[in-house]
Image (tube, rainbow, N blue to C red; front, side):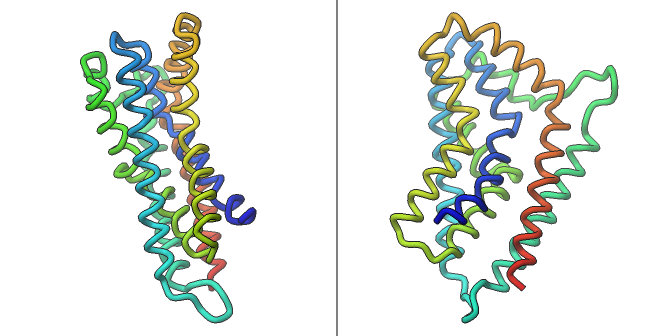
Length: 222
C-alpha cells in the first residue's frame, strides 16, 4: 500500500495546486454569500475527485494482468494520459500573459458573487470530475490504484488519502474562513492576486512534471 501511495501522491498534489479552483474558492470566500457557496464548492470538489478516481480504479481492476505482473494495456493508457498532460502543459505555457498583459480568467468567475451554494457545488464537481486537466490526473491515479491488486480496505484508504491531498487547497481556506473569517480577508486577497498573475505558469509546470512521471510509469509496464 505504501508504494501505491507514493505513486499517486504527485498526482494528488498536481490536482491540489491547480490554481483555478483555488481562485474560485477564494472569490467565494470574499463574496456576500461566502459561507454557503464556499462550503458547497468544497463538497462538490471532493465528490468530483472521488467519482473520478473511483471510476478509473474500477475500470483498471478489470484490465487483464500479465502473469509476470503489470499490464501492457494499462501502460499504453498511462502513456497516452502522460502525452495529453504534456500537450496541456504546452497549451498553458503558450497561453500565459505577456509582460504587462492582464491575465484572463474564465467568464463564469464574474458570476461568483450571485452564485448559490447549489450552483457552487455543481461547478466544483465539473471542475474536479470533468475538467480535462484534473480528470487526466485522477484517471492516472485510478489506474495505479486499480492495478495494484490491493484489498478493498487498503484501496479505500489509498483513495481517501488521495482525495484529502488533492482537495486540501480547497478544504484549508474554507475551514480557516469558518474558524476565523475576519482574519482571512487580507491573506486571501493577496493569495488571489498572486494566483491570478501566475496561473498559467504554475499549471504548465505542474502538468509538465506530472506528464513526464505518468509516461515513465507507463513505460514501466513494458
